[in-house]
Image (cartoon, rainbow, N blue to C red; front, side, top):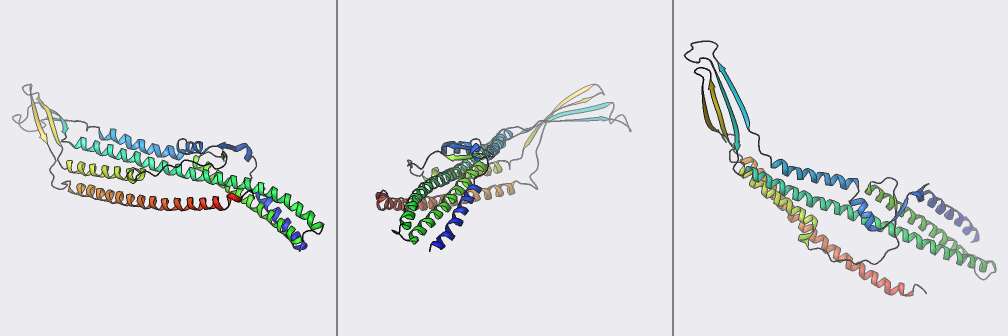
Length: 357
């Protein structure tokens, strides 16, 4: 039995030591920074490059409001006429015709701005959802980092205690008071703790590197500030107030306003023309006023209305599906939360009450 213990213990111990050294890169201590969960969230949500890119997309949606509020420019036209052949009774001298067309809108402009405002509002709500998802991911990684760090600290403490006990057992085995089997068990337990310690360090390094990527900070190696602590957990929001549901509802509002815009734009855009007619024959001038409008013969606007109505129906279905998923997710999360609290309470009563013993 002594021979088996002598063959097993050194390889496992060396393997754990080599793994722990390999997982700690050179210069890692110089890059480490002890941070709280709030500091991690700020680094990811407020200063992260991806968060900045998401906010840039919202600024584009805000710019669409200004674009929708721009009126069409008036159009200036000119025609000059002069006789090159024939009788002077038809045209004598030269004639000049100058006019300006000004489009007249009947609510189309306001409808377009309403759509742009509603779309921008939906974009802001969707930005909140995207940033919240990144915040949740940052918090999850921070908890994984804190858990791995604490697990490593406890493994180190347990290993020191086992080494102390192993020395005592080895002494007793040498005196014949205990068997070599007991000593081999302690050697294997220490080797197992070495492997657990290396695994905890690897998990901590992976979580720290993932946070560095999420925050867009190369070489940053955050460390959790202290062990786990009890935190006050507020109850979940009502389903209607969840950001993902709010975003879906605003997208439906934007789709409904787009239907109103499409219906409004079926009204032809009339152009008012103001002009002057000048001729050098008799040196006379005339003014005129005219109206022009497109004839809705080919494009009646019905296809655009049908498309907008289809988009509104799709947005309505998306809102219903999102609300249903949120309800089910909250229900499932509540069940899991209560079950885990019950398990934790049972563990506290059964195990932690006797931890000193």
